[in-house]
Length: 309
Image (cartoon, helix red, strand yellow):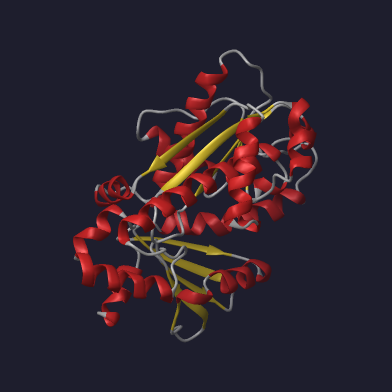
């Protein structure tokens, strides 16, 4: 079992408490809270020390050290820059952005999209209303996805189906590695479509520290592409990442519609109590093995569903 210890500031600790609200456990003496995720057990202490324990402790920790690192970056001397952070004028230039969807949802696949937006189309996409897909309803996502395709921009979409996801997870792939590989996959596919089209760089919506991303793709014989940058909440700064989030979520929603037809009722998104109840219904009607093709079975929801059987 891996173990990572780090010290985080009060602002980050407050964000963590909100983020893990539905996954809290009884905290040990001296701790502010303890939470359990699919990646790790997280224990935060009054001193600011946070302990991450589990098979994917480093990945879970990197979510929060990234936030703290951004705060530190703001206070760095002007002559010291993070090589993975794009310059401010990057967002007004022709660039590639990538984002993924479905990683926090029990049902449905993991999807990702990479989009190339030339500088001439940036105002067009902004006027269209392209923004972070998490702020949109499904019907709006579908409408905007079709409008994006009508603009005839270069893009690439990929899906990790549930059966493939579960196979990879049993082979020891963390969700972080799957995300890194699908991002790398859509970006390289997009670059092949673009040919010699010039671009300023590539921006990935950051889900882990850059060195962890590099390690994941290098473990499968790939290398980080030149001029690749990382940023949390990149969809708020980059229209290309926002477009990627719309297309990735569109693909996820369409797959969920297809899976819902298979089971005979509308599957819940997310990983809530309602999801647990639907899992129990599916097991009762089709057997537990049926989940392999429609769900991420290593999620804690699979175990939680037992009380509804």
